[in-house]
Length: 161
Image (spheres, rainbow, N blue to C red):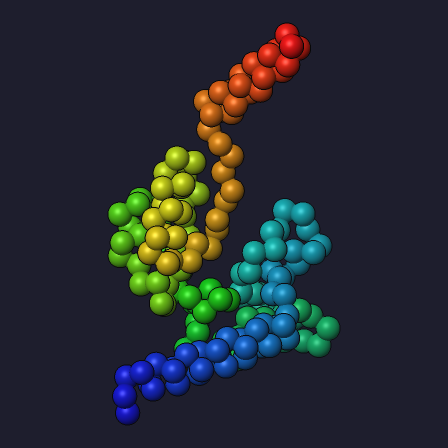
């Protein structure tokens, strides 16, 4: 079988697996830590119940569901973004060069500043890479101040006439 045909079959299978994962996830319960609803000091972050008399550990009726293997998603799409791309964390403009635009999408690290973010986004657009967390960045202050100064000059010229 040709590689093109295999690629099409793989992408179709991946799409089916993504749809299946979405459907399974909608049925999955919200896993909560035992007694987290009762005490403020106990966070909702999942921890396995291990008490000797724990009703949740014994899976008693009326108690929240526990995390189990059966709730897992399809292996083919495990760890992928809902769009079907594998996420790659980007910190520099050079990192964009290593990304495969067919299978990977980039997420710009939160610590990246506005100037570098603009450069990374521009490079990703050139290469055809999808950015998962794009951010519209306003013009730098120097440009805004220059535009305001021009507007003030235009108003003053209009008043003189």
